[in-house]
Image (cartoon, rainbow, N blue to C red):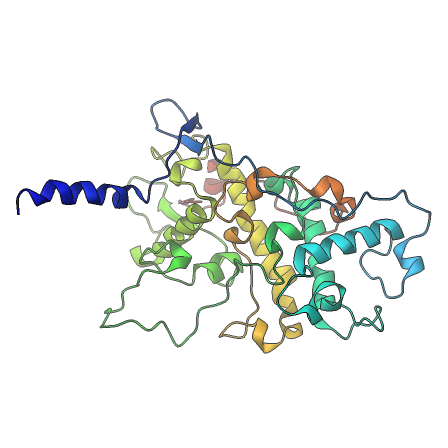
Length: 363
């Protein structure tokens, strides 16, 4: 028996290493010396995801707009008819390519009645209009998060009519688990399989439960200004677990563990994430939730709400979606200015105190 133990240990080595990412790593220091704040990347890994090439070279404008040539063009009526056709061809490839399971719904027919392209009778056409406006708003008003990389429909859809990573409110019937949990949480993928509350997306990405994410006191001792219980702080931790999993990073990608709350010692990525949380909230509040009545029952969750976005919808496990690949330069119609404004900047320590908020942000 004793002789067989070394052989058993050797046999288990490949299994134990199966969860490791093999290959040469490159370490980039992101924080102050001695804080162990670093970003670790696989040198052999792909620099950026493959993205679809433009459908064809964008023709020079002829002088006519889409609104002059086609009927009922409500969002892109001012772009040239050449660019309109070019963008429609690209969106078709991004969202409903010809090789989807149901050929009758592939291509243009997914949104249009082929006998009357101007008709609004198919609900996906109305949804697509609003999604184009949403994309324009993100590119025009949320550059503090998407910067010059921008987004297109491909950033979320990746060839799927419904993006692969979306969420709805959990069923009010509760999750079924064996045994008595005595009121405790259970591991859930939405919070990185940690035993934390599962309603964090509704609370922070729709604003239904308040939009502040604050748990740490700015004072040495407890004060009446911070009356949060330990249980109330669990949702903040759950949100942080989601952010970490969505981007494939750990806490020190944004925070200095010497003081999670202080902005002065945090990385620039923390500010980018601060804007990102508010951008996701704006998308769900202003563009997706108001469309609830447009969707059929099979496009709604158990509580009747539509599929919404979170950080994983775009990032899909990478710090920068698609490894930082940018497509927006090929589609100028998706960069038009809009009227929706983004927040000016993250709060500073002084602003927290001036506002009488004696608790600090963990985001």
